[in-house]
Amino acid sequence: MSDTIITVKNLNTYFYTNQRCNRALNGVSLEIKRGKTLCVVGESGCGKSVTASSIMQLLPKLCRIEQGEIIYHSEDRGDIAIQDLERNGKVMRSLRGKDIAMIFQDPMTALNPVYTIGWQISEMIRAHEKISKKEARLRAIDLLKSMGIPNPEKRVDEYPHQFSGGMRQRAMIAMAMSCNPKVLIADEPTTALDVTVQAQIFKLMDELKENYNTAIMLITHDMGVVCELADDVVVMYMGNIIESGSAQELLGNPQHPYTQALLKSIPMLGKGANQNLNPIKGSTPDPLNRTKGCQFAPRCDKRTEKCDEIMPEEQLVGKTHMVRCNLFCSDMKGVN
Ligand SMILES: Nc1ncnc2c1ncn2[C@@H]1O[C@H](COP(=O)(O)OP(=O)(O)O)[C@@H](O)[C@H]1O
Ligand SMILES: [Mg+2]
Image 1 (cartoon, rainbow, N blue to C red):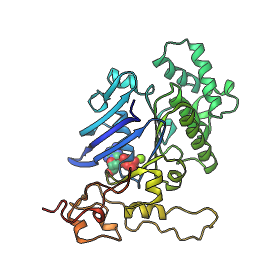
Image 2 (cartoon, rainbow, N blue to C red):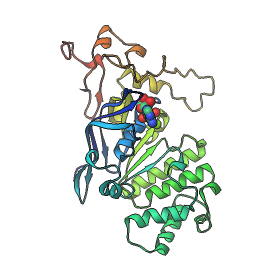
Image 3 (cartoon, rainbow, N blue to C red):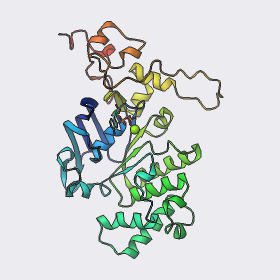
Image 4 (cartoon, helix red, strand yellow):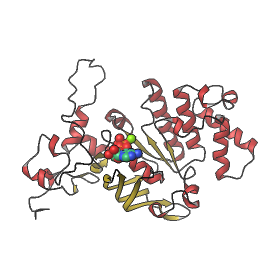
């Protein structure tokens, strides 16, 4: 069995709004490994959520996968080409929740306000397994308990609005974990929560990975979180992966000027509020205004003329470490 559970190859996902085409993903390739945490990092608008929604086949109506592959390497069913499945067809529905589950930034995306938490978790389990309502309810209580929700026997009968933000997030994770998915995709799962709850939720996710060998794709814009949790990292910029590798290689020796800038913007504990945080200069780019060269060039300290002209190719700079930057491309490559 291969170590990889999901392979994304040259994924192009576009939005068609107001007769314009926004290439939200412009050739994304990545691998999610069994039992490992892949962190996907980058500024707002770079395509992190669209990558997750493409894998889940939960894209908005005006959005289409134009090219590329998303392969789910199932243990019992062999390779499944997700991009070819109907969004709401039988196979995709059987994968969602049972094999690949997702937790969202806003728990109310996943929780229905008119049903109790317990009912929702039980229904999720019963959609995939033949067990009685009573058994499913007991499983829901167990799950809430394992998520650190106090008094689960009582809270299982409460509605989402009776839960605090942090508790709701835990309930959603409980629901996502209810069928022991092989892959958990978490899209900025703690952004709205305070730091203590954030730390608890990340600890829970780490335990799930250790205990159930769950593969996790964790989307975040917080490099501090990446340094703490990642086994592997991909850095995205304007719909492309500009650097990737094992956390050890990439974080120990970041090569792309954008990754270096992201790492410089992490606040250091104990240094107080007056530290010099070096935010990345310039603003995030306009996705409808692509240039022909490197998309980061207008903001890059190391930019040369070549960068305005040539889109850099992927270069391997370590065992697992890939960077897409003209500094690493020989002069002959890509020149017309
Ligand atoms: N519902 C939508 N309609 C139109 N464009 C969208 C929509 N969602 C995302 N996009 C566009 O797709 C690109 C990637 O967005 P997204 O994946 O949400 O970024 P991130 O999650 O990294 O902040 C952006 O250019 C964004 O404007
Ligand atoms: Mg997002």
